[in-house]
Image 1 (cartoon, rainbow, N blue to C red):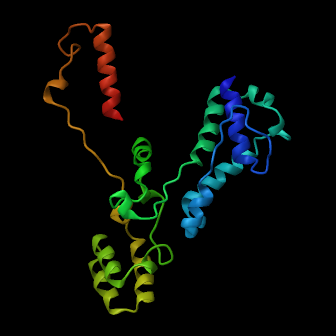
Image 2: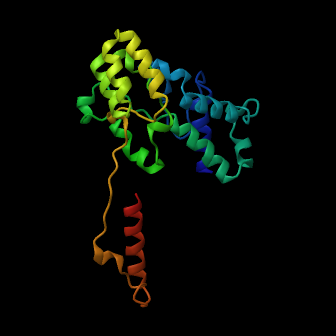
Image 3: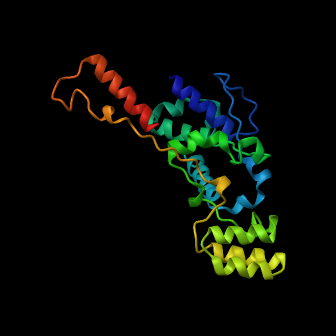
Length: 226
C-alpha cells in the first residue's frame, strides 16, 4: 500500500504540475528537466529528450480520467508496473549541471558518476558535439585538438586555415563519423583487481560453506559488482 501511495504522489509531481493537492506521504519530487534545458537549450531536440518525451506520453496515456483524485485505480496495477512508472518519475529528478568544471575536478556532472556506473551509461550513445552546442563555443585551436583526438588528422589541420564559423561547421560534419566526446564528459572507469587469494573459496575446495561464509561471499560479490 505504501508503494501505491508513493507512486500516486510521484505521478502528481510528474504529470500534474498545476495540482495543488499535497502529497500524502509528504515526499516531493523536483524535476530537473527544465534546468537541464536552461543550461543546454540545444538538447531540446536531442536523442535523450526524444526518448524522454516518448516515455512521458506513453505513461500519460495510461492514466485514467481524474487519476489524481484517488489512487484506487493504481491498486489494479501489478508491482512491476508500479516500479516502472516510479522509476520514470524519479529519473526526471536527476540533475548534473555543473557551472564550473574546476569545481568537479575537470569532470562534468561528477555527482552522477555513481548512477552512470550503475546503469553502464555513456554520453557517447546520447550526445553529438555540434557547432551550436560545442564547436561554436571553443577556439579554432581547441576545435583542431578535438578533431585530432577523434583521429581526424586531416580535418584537424584544415580547420586552422579557416574562419572560426567555417571551422565549427566542418568539425560538426566530420565528427559525425566518430563517437568522440570531450574527455570531461566521459565516465571515469575503475578496474577492480581482486587479490589472487580471493579467487579460491570454500566451494572451490569442495568444502561446504557455512551460513556466515556464504553471507560474506555474497556481500563481497555485490561490492565488487557495484
